[in-house]
Image 1 (cartoon, helix red, strand yellow):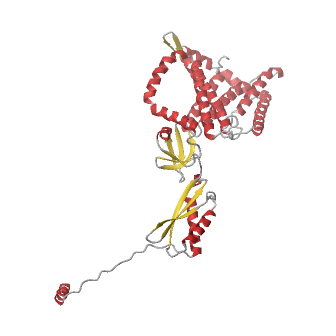
Image 2: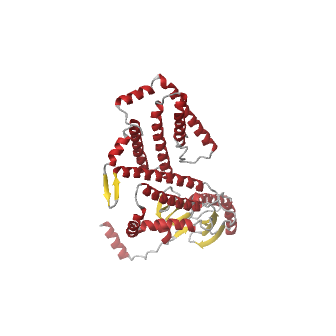
Length: 438
C-alpha cells in the first residue's frame, strides 16, 4: 500500500501520463484492451451464450470477461515494464481503474442474472458503482490507508468482542462479495439445468431453486464468518428468531413449502391448462412462493402456492392434454336428420385443430320447441392455443354445411290465439257508443 500523494506529486504523475515518454505505455495499454476484446469475442463465438450472461453480457464488450482479461493482461505488462526499462506512470492509474471496472461489471451482471428487470437491483448497481469508483480514487491518491486507520480508531466492545468501524465495513464488503460469488455460481448452475432437455421443466426448476437456496445459505455463513461474527452465538438467536418467524411468517413459509411440493409432485407443470378460483389459463412459471397463470386474453394471475395445495384445481393437461369441446345447433323438423348428422361430423373432422381420433360426434340431444337440437362434440390437443377460436371455426364449418344441404336453422315461432268477444245487446251497444262519444 503506497503512501498518500501530495497535490504536487499527483500533478507530476498526471504530467508524465500525458507526456511523450508515456507513449510506449499508452501503446501497451491499448494493446492490452484490444487483445482482451479480441479474446472475449473469440470465446463468445466458441461457447454457447445464454441470455443475461455474466461473462459476455449482451454485446460481449459489456460483460465481465472483457475487464477481467484486460486487468490480467495489464497486470502482466506492468510486471514486465522494468525489464524494458520503462518507468510505470500510466499503469499506476490504469490498474485501479480496471480493477474497479471489473468489480462493477461482475456485480452488475450477477445481480441482473439473478434478478432481471428489477428496479431495486438497478438502484443497488448504481450505488455500488459509485462506492467502487470512490474507493478507486482513494486508492490512486493514497488516502485509503489513512481513512482506514481513522476508521480503526472508532470501535465498540460487546462483552469480550471488540468491533471497529473498519471491521464492520470490511466485513460488509467481504460478505457482499461472497454473496455475489454465490449468486454467480447458482446462476451458472441454474442456466445449465434449464438448458437440459432430458429433464422435465418442473424438475429443472425445483433443482435450480434448491441449489440457489443452498448456495446462498452457504455463502451467508461464509459472509458472516468473514465479517467476524461468531457463528456459534447464532444458535440461541436463531432459535428465538425461528419461533417468531414461525408465527409471523407462517403464510409465507407455507407458500414456499407448497412451491417445492408442487414442483416435486408434478401436480402442476409449466404449460398445463388449469382453472383456479374461477380463473382459467396456462401455467407460465412456477416460483417458490407463487405460480403465474396466463389466460387466453392476456391477463396474468399470481396465485400463492398454498392455494394450489389446499383448494380445488382443475387441470386439463395433467394426465391427458386432450380437451373435449362442444357446440349446439338447431335444424328444422322436416329435414333428413341422419344425413345432416353424417355431413356435420365429416365437416367438423376436416377442421385443422380437431382430432380425428377420437373423432367428432354429433348427437340429437333435444326436441326443442323450434326445431331439433344437435350437439356436436369434438376433441383438441392444444388447449393452450385457445378454445374460442377453434369453436368459431367449427361453427363456420357447420353453417357452410347446412347451407350446402339446404337445411335452415329455424327461427323462434310463436302462435297467437284470438278470443271471440261475446255479442252485445242493442241496449249495451247504445250505452257503449254514448260513452265513447263523451
